[in-house]
Every structure is written in structure tokens, then in C-alpha cells.
Length: 218
Image (tube, rainbow, N blue to C red):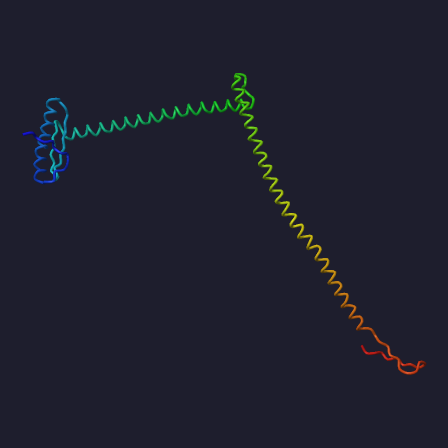
């Protein structure tokens, strides 16, 4: 009878699961023993059953094997850390060298744009520098005109505000003298009325030769 392929999944039946565990545990312990004897390997095997029971096998000492494993893991981690640090350091060195070259190229281009260090430049390089300067001049002029127009608009706006304020002041200057003139006229009229009421009136009674003057009471 051909044996079917075992599916790698949890066995749901508890009895079947326990039987399978016991068989495979014994087979695994046997294989570990054979490996240690046939190949002279240091083998340590630790198994916990579903119920928490410990099963172990060690070709020599379990503590020594575990300690050897711990030391080996630490050494690997140290080596990996050192290799990572070395790689990072090398990357930083490469980045620094690349940035230094870029800075040097920028300094050289800056000197050439200033008209310095052109002795070793070719015709093509000189033409490129000339075109770049022309583009820069065009950009600067455009920005200059933009700033000029902005300042002109600001001055025109201020001029309108000042003109409006000046017009308001002119109106006030015209209205106030007229009000003062009207107030003066009204005051003068009142004064004249008061003086006319204070005028003395002389009355004469009797013959012209002997007239007696009576003052009209005020």
C-alpha cells in the first residue's frame, strides 16, 4: 500500500497528535544521536511536549553547548556590527570625497564667471560661460524692472492718498473762513441792535425861548 504524503498542518485529533509527537520525537532523538556519533558533531537538542514535558539530548554537556552557542552568536553580532560600521564609514568617506569634488568644481565655475582662471578654458567652455552670463543679465534686468514697477505702483498709490487728503484739507480751509465771516456778520448785527436801543432821545417842552429838556428814559 502506497503511503500518502503528510499534510503540514496541525492534527486536530488529540490522540493522533500525541502518537505522532511520540514517534517523531523518538526519531529526531535517534537522528541527533547518529549525527553526533557518525560525524563527531557537538549536538544539543531540546524539545518541549504540548503538555510542557522536557525532552533533551546532548552529545557532551548541554550547558557547554548552550554557552558555546551564546558566544558564537555574540561573535557573529559583533562581526556584523563591525562590518556595518565599516560600510557606513566607507560610505561617509565616499560621500565626503564626492562633496569635495563638487565644491571644487563650483569654486572653479565661480572664478570663471568672475573672469578668473580662463587661461585653460576652451572655445566651447568660453561660449558656455558667455551664454550663461547673458542669461544671468537678462534675469537680473527682468527682476530689476519688476522691482521698479512695484515701487512705481506704491508711489502712485501714495500720491493718490496724499491728493485725497489735500483735497479734504482745501475744503476745510474754504468752509471755515465762510463760517467765521457769517459769525462776524451776526455778531456785528447784534452789536448794532444793542447800540440803537441805548440811544438817548431828547424832548423839549414849552416855547422855543424857554424850553425845558427832558431826557427820555432809557
